Image (tube, rainbow, N blue to C red):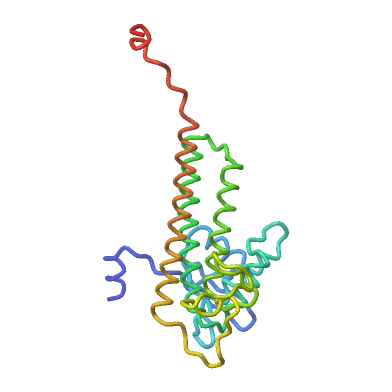
Length: 241
């Protein structure tokens, strides 16, 4: 039944990798032992796989993928995870908004991957592989600003957070306003954020993602206009004048 379902859907089942007590990894599809480097290349090639503990049968794919990241980060000149990002990520463990972080990171990476593919195609088709460093470097800085702003949204009670726009540090709040959020400290055992607050955060994150996509679109349009040759005046119009 499973084979028929797989054939109908056209989906290919992920390859099963077994990890033994001696830390050796066994690829059941090729009946051979593999290394983390092999699994890393499989990820880059788009090959889906799951890793199980050979003894307990537990799915340990997440921990193995994390090991691959650690191995890659230890190689000189290949760091993808900035220190500040790692510190911020660690700080969200145990936070009330922890459950929002995985989905946000997943959506951000998917959006980034889509935009990168568009840029590669555009550079190949229009620029002959010549990379416009300055333009996309500026766009990357803009993306970083949006990302940092979104990360601050996740933890509005974090100490040392910059004050909200429109207010100065130490300013007296208006009667209609509560105490400054930046200095507020949630009481111990306080309940998670309300549904309205969570929905507001999600809306803000979606808005930021739209801004990032808009930046990429504008950059592509500008590159197209710069690549076009200047329009020559119409001969007939010149004669009339």
